[in-house]
Image 1 (cartoon, rainbow, N blue to C red):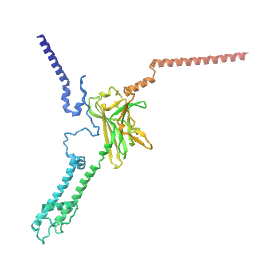
Image 2: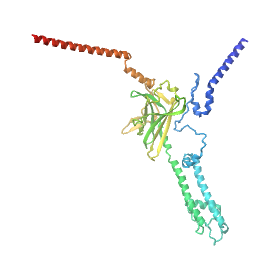
Image 3: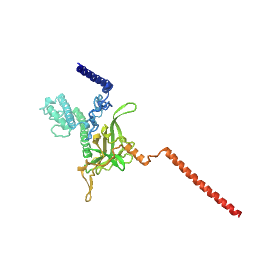
Image 4: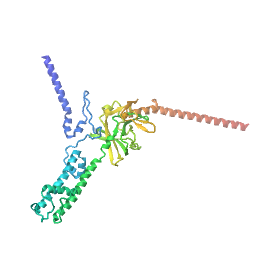
Length: 426
């Protein structure tokens, strides 16, 4: 009975503990459905010690595609107001299907009108009558009207079916079809040309290093990554920028999911404008304005952040703007590493070894944050025994020394005066 009582008591305590945990977490559970999914995932929680590490969801994938899906878009008519961009943004299979369907529907529509004109005029009843002047010669059914519509719109002109001057309605229809056919050609061919000439594939030859590194450079802690261009035709007016994607909570309690913060990669010095002939290492100095100012080596794996890097420029061959993107999460940021050099001097030229483009090597780097390093540097410049009282004592000693010097000078002057008086009396 005693064992059963203890077991019942322990089960009761467990159930009460679970209910208390549920009561603690219930306010969060109530408010979560009102927020987007990403915001609910990033809400601060009371995390237990044995909680498994949550996988960080990327905002931008390594290949540069944004991992964002637009849902519950009710105003779909806005896509139709910019139909040209909508068609260009479609996938190739849908674009080709629409291309074929537009031309086919246009030919069928005007073929039907040509057939109706011939049918209403009675041309179908006088096909074999040589004295009858039809609207279109040798048009004896819907199929021939459809073929004549294709010949008219595409300006093929085989010469077998010809419109006559005894059909004013046919002449008007010919003008309308010629004008509308030119508009359809300009629109559809323009869409195909823009889609073919899009510089999206040019970004496939712009590469980013698989990892970002943090190490010392010129005595300062820096975050670095490498970019390169595989083609011989260069990117004109290339520029680089970086964003830190990290959820934050303001002092007023407002939760901002996926907040974007600029990472300075040389905007004020002009280092963000690149001459991308060979691979370049982009450096971000971690100073007081940097979002990594207080992050140390031990704290970095605990951070849930993402660095998005964007390379923009004009394609030299076409002059169109190209953009390449990539991102780094905390597991892809190596603390205490540098990039392996890839540029070597050969006989009369420089050679780039892209086999070592992603390679890094370890280097001695302090594990402290940039803020802690700055505090240590300031302490090293100032003696540890330095204080306000020591400063006052030093100042007092200087004043006593100056007073003693003044007294010595005064006594020397008094002695000189006494000697002069004695000499005058003599």
